[in-house]
Amino acid sequence: MSRHRWPRLPARLRWHRPGRRIPEDPAAQRRLVPDRPARLAAVGGIVVASILTFAFGSIESTFWPVAGSMALGIAALALPLAGLQKAFGAKGFTIGAMAMMFLGNPLAGIATTSAWLPSGLGTFGQILPPGAAGTLVRSAAYFDGAGGLVALSTLVTWIVVGLLLYAVGMRRAVGEEAAERPSAQVTA
Image (cartoon, rainbow, N blue to C red):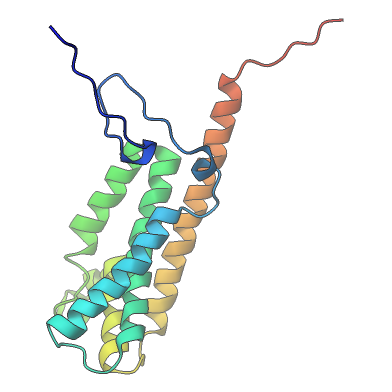
């Protein structure tokens, strides 16, 4: 009976096998800004703006402001979730993702505006990233950015909060790593 051998893939392409820990890039663990959510936001903003402009034809003149608005919206969702993951583990990520999905999306008012929602809920929806992103994209696409300053500042605030959570998680991971490492004892 021959033993099945798993293929040798680069560390970034390996999948998880039960009982085996995939080594992570040590340089990636020390980065101040999580690079994957930042790249996801930049590429996602361009892709979504391209689809809205060239496939649907719903945006006619302002491609780059819409792409930037979408990138900010994606970053305002991805960076806090990455920060929650780094700071609190899978439970923090799950709670953050559920809050954004089950509170942020319905209360965003993207299909119309937040004015069509009940008064307190519409305002709350604009504080969360999906609502602020929808308002900023709408303002960039159709009103040359008019009325988008509050949404822009809301998204930037969420990005800063995400980076702070990520930094807290990095600091916690360094502290746990130092605690796990046996200290060198000096003998005279």
